[in-house]
Length: 162
Image: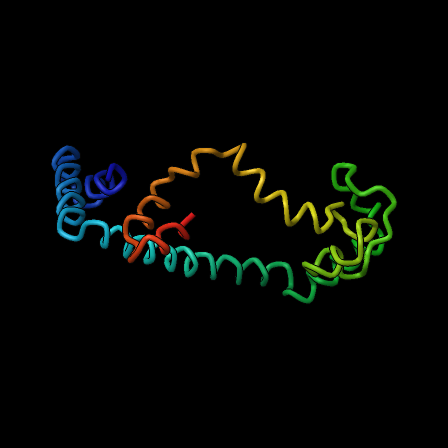
């Protein structure tokens, strides 16, 4: 609301306090009128806006580097000669697969010696479940999770919102 009030003040010359009250009133009416449903629709709309907003950035970035083929070619070179690009000393004379940096599962399934990150299947499968439970306990009561649980059709759907 602050950003919108500043924008209205800059573009239209409105009084900042008046613009802030107007923005606050619009948001209050929107939430009271639509309630939880309006918040959910807003979240879905924001998702598509973010995806559509990043699409041109990805396209322009790929265009600047020469395309996806050039990126794969460069990553194949890094996998063949990892010591040329020693990323923070992480890579220590490993023999990597040609597609170690451009494939998601083949290097992992080939074993720890072929994986540029040194992570095995156990680490990939177990760590995501352990880490949030200790490091980020606030995720258990995150507003978005609670919002989805409150909007669920039944108790079974509400339990699956974690």
